[in-house]
Length: 396
Image 1: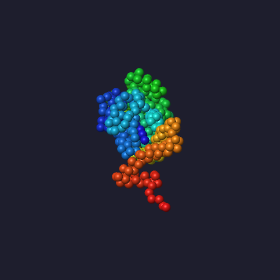
Image 2: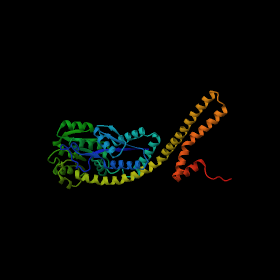
Image 3: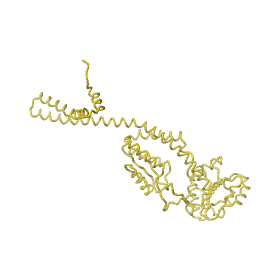
Image 4: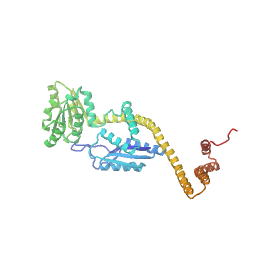
């Protein structure tokens, strides 16, 4: 059996994650990266299965940039047999990750039909019986989750993204995927603002007019690199009066903060800072850890279901090899017999010689094994020989 383990290269869990100064993403330069801890646990479990004699090979799969080779090397150093790197310089969606894993599994497995069916049954069970797919742990998906709880219909919501960096783009894509189509991008650089507005199908404005735009906003996500707040409490208070106190979701992903903290004291304002989101993410991670434990049990169950098919395949190979070995002996002795007949030897003598040679060669190896078993009192092998050849005392 082969074991395929997918591993991911992430920021080391001992490193404090920092947002870039321009708010365009997470700082990764000169930051220690390592294997995702749950993936490391998966590699260790695969090694234990192999050490127990239930697997022949462990294959490590990683998807991403060239540097992901470091993660594969770590797994190889732990004891894995070989690695596969699927290069991609872009972020790969979970669906595409699943497709890649499926393709690699089918390439590596000699019986892809049965293996794929087992995978999909297990995946369906994991999704329905655990909370592995619930509880967001990314800023984009968490923003969507909070918005879905606050607004009855996201498709009618109006979104303003203050800032046009990597974080704004990430959150904007998640909101667009959730069905939102009305986007306003407020940014200092008109070029970058226009680019993000084009990507999301919205419009761009100057960041100086962001406060005035609050009158037309249901969801605001701020992620600029400003050293001072961009959205003030007074402007928000005015917008609430003109909106007849309709709720506004505000998500402040900037360091330092883009929205004055006092804004959260206003009624109908739902303000979440980066710290607030991190607490939710930490809680969700704990829930996912529990779900991962449940998922591992489901995986083990379906892996055991697949083993009988694998055992049948292995048993068939043993029988095939056994027959082939004796067929080689037969073919060799038959050729000798035919040669002797062609020389004019007596047919009866040729047949007797063929029978003797076949008996001697076929029984040689078992005879040696049984003799050694008797000499060393190897009872399991002796009992197996008695059973196999129907030996022992016979009733008269």
